[in-house]
Image (tube, rainbow, N blue to C red):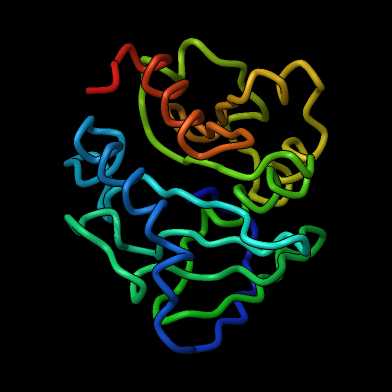
Length: 194
């Protein structure tokens, strides 16, 4: 996690999320896990790799829950719904059966930057990281990083990728559709769809 800024997580336990909200995300997460772009690693204590998609016109989105990267399969209990994020003070209003990951702040910043960004994948991959533009500094706080994301140039937003200098292999892939975002990410990581 990027240090230096506290997140005000306002999480409300709710019913298990309906399948129509999370099934597409789970299919993508399985592809990423099969390619080593989500899951467990000796390098990351809690695992890595989260996916999100916007679900309504207000910008609410679904994201794989905190600590779920190590699970082989997820269901509606292991996804969180982010109702809103105040990016100025890092306040998150979320619900579900499991807390959202801290990366949901980064995803929320991207979702709010442009209305057509409907899908975000957050992963760790050195090959893809070396091929994409980077933002921030090695010691950037989370609030500073959010500011950098919100100020991304049109060129970077159009590319659909950004890396964070504060986390040397973290890749954010984003786009209008989840499936095309996965395909572009696999290409950047020198992997192909099966």
